[in-house]
Amino acid sequence: MKIATWNVNSIIARLPLVTRWLEKEKPDVLCIQETKCSDEKFPLLELKAAGYDCVLFGQQSYNGVAIVARNSCANVVRGFPEDTAESHARLLAADIAGVSIIDVYVPNGQVVGSDKYQFKLGWMKRLREFLDQSQFIVVTHKKRTMAAVDRLWGVTMQ
Image (tube, rainbow, N blue to C red; front, side, top):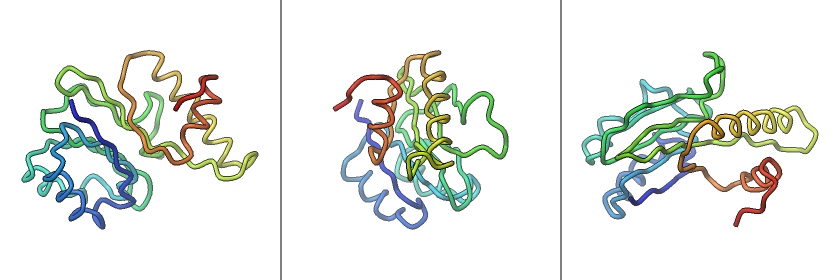
């Protein structure tokens, strides 16, 4: 299975690039972060026309994740179990062709010791608890992620 990830920083702005890339590379799964649009505004028709099923967890103007797959997506999970309607759209999981995949958009902690940094550490702790309950392939963008994962899991990832 060919799995790819892309932090698009607005799916609407990058849609022509995404569809051209999908046509050229033909991944089985593309995990997208930072879609920056609500589910209602996500370009489903264009991606379905390219041969992909889509599951979404959008948020207007910020965050948002999507899984785009050649096979249908089952057992979809949007966010952490304890999330509310006000929670950030940063975690999306689905089973695709017998493989459990989780698409993660990790918060930017900015400055160590700041409120945003504390939010990120709390979010990463919740991610660890979520992952401890199941086996997934975790897909995320690398920007500012691996150091936080290193600290959380106590290992060095390369």
